[in-house]
Amino acid sequence: MAIITRQRALITRRQALIGGLAGSGALLTGCSRILQVDALTDSTSFQRVLAVAQSWTRATQRFLLGGGEMAREYKPSDISPHFKANGTLDPGGEEYERHVAQGFVNWHLQIDGMVAHPLTLSVADLRRLPSRSQITRHDCVEGWSAIGGWTGVPLALLLRAAGVRAGAKYVVFYCADNLDGDPAKGGEQSPGQYYESIGLTDAMHPQTIIAYDMNGKPLDVAHGAPLRLRVERQLGYKMAKYVRHIQLVSDFSRIAGGHGGYWEDHGYDWYAGI
Amino acid sequence: MPTPVAEAMSQTEQPRTRARREIIYRHAWPVRLTHWINALTIFIMVGSGLNIFDAHPRLYWGQAGADFDKPFLTLGPWPDWLTLPSYMDLADARHWHFFFAWILVLNGALYLAWSLASRHIQRDLWPTRTDLRAIPRSVIDHIKLRHPTGEAAKRYNVLQRVAYVGLLMLIVGMVVTGLCMSPGFDAFAPWLVAALGGRQSARTLHFLFASVIVLFIAVHLIEVVLAGPLNEVRSMLTGRYAVPREHD
Picture 1 (spheres, one colour):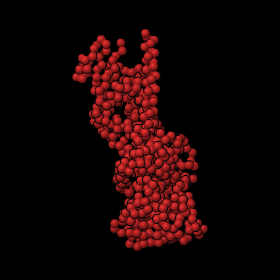
Picture 2 (picture 1 turned 90 degrees about the vertical axis):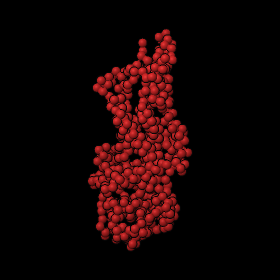
Picture 3 (picture 1 turned 120 degrees about the vertical axis):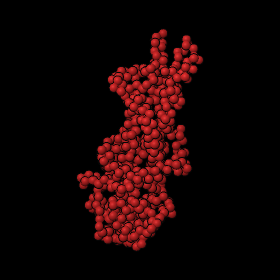
Picture 4 (picture 1 turned 90 degrees about the horizontal axis):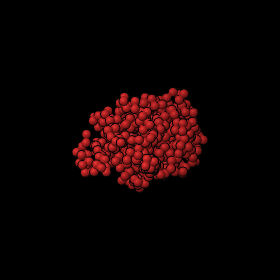
């Protein structure tokens, strides 16, 4: 009798173990099917629910960073020996190739839109203006980080010179690279053309610069030559490379896909502080 | 102390064929509610987290780390039945992850506030000195799959206490390491990121803590099945738990 009872107990235990493991496995693995997550993900109304979190996160970070907190700056010895280049590595195209060959002497940065005095500045003009140097960590949305040294003109200085008109809320950056594979055609609204936008709070932050040097040398093509944006408290995709045109707007819903940036038009959040 | 329900139930049973099963009210409603919200949330966080992980399936130690740096660990890609959504999509996975991160935090805050105010954590979860001395015996009991009965079954044993308090700490750790990956939060609390060893260390710890949580869930479910799945699940749904009777 005792042996039978014991055997029974053993089977029960084994079954329990198998049951527990299988149960946890099924729960973990079957999670997506049970919840029909792919169908939910594709549903625009469900996406609108999920998007609520973006505004909570933005509001919370706006509150926490209300004092104009600075992103940490690092020592020269912290600089990554190889700074990964991502996105466009070379915009290509006849026009950009000509600029590369000429050492970007004819590259002009245009600042217009809702400003009192539109500006057109060459790279040499920008280099004559007061500059800021910072060694910061670049965080990619994919998960990696690299530390680099950047020198450039504070965007706030350029915006003050141009005179931001009342009602302007966003700064839009138009770039020379086309991520959908076509080389730059010159038309900044053509599909795939890289662009980005930030709010005025981030635009006026002291660490937000239009960088022309990286690690003490002029920016190379892979890292955005001749000009790129640095917005240190947000993710890498905000930091547009190959910038040639800055525009102040009250609303970006009519620009390209209407979400305020190339990656935003591909589903990524406009606020990239997380 | 039998509750009225327990008395009513025991009166209907025949003592000769079945022993009296005392029913106690084990889980208060805030515990039950937050348990199930948490259970769903953790599965969503793990699934969407693995999808996000696949965008750069390497872990590093320190502030920085990318393709050219020596990884601490390289894993994945994860199979599609484990990730949320099933196909690789960083933007959508982030939407899921950051929405349910808020649910996790709000639900966790509700649980902690109630549990501290009602002294649930202090009374039921925090191990006492006597509990800690009983760890070796409890380990042996667990290995032998021997579950407490009678009076001993009315309170959490020491391994349960350590596991549940540990889980609470792990979830706090998940939130902290998660926040430390945010460039915005890092400008607010750079010291916290530095204390964890850097942003990439925070990402590695986030992954390791999550792995321990998955291990907890597996052991937790095995124990539920071993201890009597119907009684255990019922107690987490209705609060009522039938105390296993003493061995002869």
